[in-house]
Structure formats: structure tokens, C-alpha cells
Length: 337
Image (cartoon, rainbow, N blue to C red; front, top):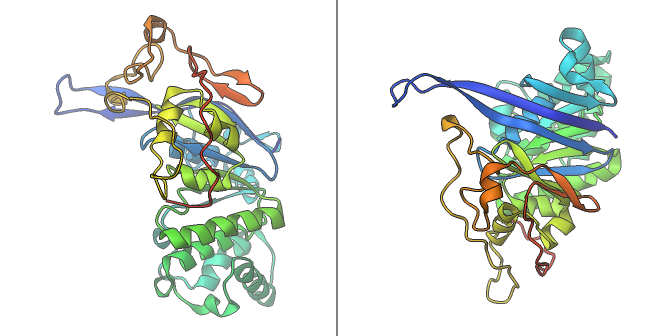
């Protein structure tokens, strides 16, 4: 297993001065998250804004230090490393951020942007650097002449291709993608997603792909984890999760996906979810975190937190009363909202 995440926890302290009951509260952005990522696999993380998926990703790549848990990459616990030891491990994992314009230095040429990791880690002369930059540009579908351009001279899709080329400069084993296509037009999204799949097949990359767009994750990920209030509430192979969601929250998310032709496409009946996402600054609800919004909640749900357990092979869910009805699978489509 390439990546093993165990009991990952990250909490923040927030001040609510000026509000009723002013003081400092502890917010658990990530609360006991565990998952594995195999070589050549794409694991998607999805959920509402504020569910903790981005914080989870940032803790995995050590841009945020978790308060608890392990992040094992090739058996090495990244949470125990610092300084030079962590810097050496960073060659194995890279990041593609959401906004390619803000993640590229506006004063650097494309050549400098892509070459920077190799300058820092590899002992290459200028000719070797230029050749490597040219090869990386070709690998993401850009001509070598783009090396002399500045980020503001590129379209959004071209800038994201440059970001992807930079992430491949050190031949990493894993790439964490945080909403990597959400800032792009729909037609460009499809091109970048196909590029991700092509690069995965060519270089054997593993992706931790974070997105709120379930259609994107359906197109790209092999397995999919659904997060709610800092916890994973369901995880399964992507096709299985779309066909047979077991958690009421997952069911409601899938039912909310817009269809290209709602008059002719088969859709599942949505679960009637009540209220809004709980205010975690005011403290998490007791028992199941979803029970205040769940139409199927019973007394046990309000008293005891369900553990993530395997219901079927490779399909885990944190629910006392997982949905048993088998919902018809929506027809597969490469359409991306």
C-alpha cells in the first residue's frame, strides 16, 4: 500500500469574541479519518463545503501538521519528520491546487516555474533542465514554446496544465489534487480530467482527488469517500457507491446531481434532508453527527455514534441503520457538470 492514513485528527481553536458566550472554542476540522491509497489508484474525497476534505488533504501532504494520527507513505510516517528528512520525502508527493493563477508565481516564466523543483532537488545543468522542461510541457499537451510565456499570457486550462507539469517534475508517486478543475470551464474540465487519467496510466501515479463535484469524481476515481463534519461516513468503489449508497447523507448527495436530460434519465428519489450543516463552532451534536438532519434517525442515533463498518466487500458505512433498498444505478456518463 502506497499511502496509509490512520486516525488523522486536526483541531483549530477559534475565538467567538463579540458573540453570546464569548471565549475560545475547539473545532475538529478532521476527526479520526483513516483510509488507504494503493499505487496507481485514485481515491476521491467528497462532501459539503466545511466537511474537512481539504484540511484532510493538507494534513496528508504535511502543509498542515495534524494533532494526531499517522500518515504512512511507503511505510514512512510523515508526521514524525521535519526539516531535511521531510524535505527529502516531499519528492514522492506533490500538489495541484484549485486556482492555477494564484499557485503560479506571476513574475516567473513557465520555464522557471516548472524547473524550480528540479533546481532544488536535482543536479542538472542548464541544457538538461531545458530538455526536461520541454518534455514535461509535451507530456501535458503544451508545445515547448510555452516555456517562455508568463502565467498571465495563458488561459485557465493552460495554466493548470503548467501546474500539473510542475507537479510531475520530480517523478512523484502520489499527487494530491484539491478542487483541481473547479475553477475551469466545463469543456476544459473534461480535457484536464482526461489528462489526469492519461498521466496516471503513463506514469503509474496515485491521486488523492478532493472535489465537491461528484460527477468529476465519478469520472476519475476508483474509490470514493464521503465526508461529513470531519469524518468519513461512507467509502466504497465508485461504481458501487453510486449504485448502492448506504448512508442517508450519501444518498441525498447523489440525488442532488443535475442530469443532462432530467425528463428521460432515471433518477433516485432524494432523501428529505432537514436543516443545514451543524455549526461545529458551537460543538458537535451527540451520537451520529448526521442525526439532526436525517429523516430515518431513531433514539440510538441521538445517543451513540456509529462506527465505520464494512457492510459489503470494500463498502464501509458509519450508520446504525444503513439503507437496505437497492437503488437503480443511473446510466454511466462522461458528462461533467
